Length: 290
Image (tube, rainbow, N blue to C red):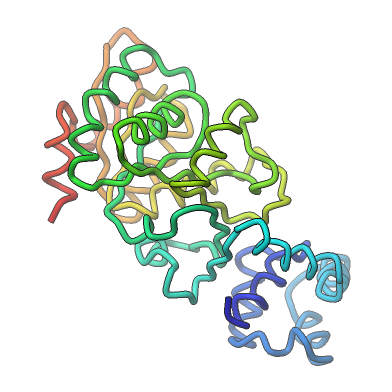
């Protein structure tokens, strides 16, 4: 880990610092050298923030607890990847407001492979399960890494089927590594950290919050060339992911469903709006493998 990554990680752990605040700080001090000098006080004081936020940031920059916490990550095999690192996924770097920092545990080589993001309903039906069983073997045989969000339902089925089929999978989580959500997927997360990969833009001790998940969805779509939606209601997080993919100019695939099923309303609407209708793995591969 280089010095810039360490300095950016320290900044990333400070309360009151969001994406835009990080941007302002990096614009004024691209190397972040001032974080270890008295001039940091002036740098932080000039930020367009309330005094209470400025006070918290300055306190946290001096915190020995935060510095020790960061040093512990290596012992727990948690890697920090800054947006300036060569390891950082290029496709994600090209998105709007990409994460300044990613925390990773598992096989980092998966970041260099062709990826397909797969999301869908948390109340997956037998139909959704059969769709995954039908599509994934051919995708896996063609070296596609499956990306999803470790949520219940389609996400969980996608991760498990990728592993069962002898492929690889990446989970993007909405909290830190020390607080896996949902807890029912703790064992799955442990398995993935050994031979696959889990990523988060949140420091490991961050508890998941409701607003983290829409933010997480932009990473799911941003890290892949295409996103496949399998079962989604008319208003769901899966559609947020699909919209993020569309905004970034990525491929959006959707599996059609029963017109009488609420679980198909979202996917059928996506198809009407121009998402590619998927019946076979070849429908996806002809767009991704080139």
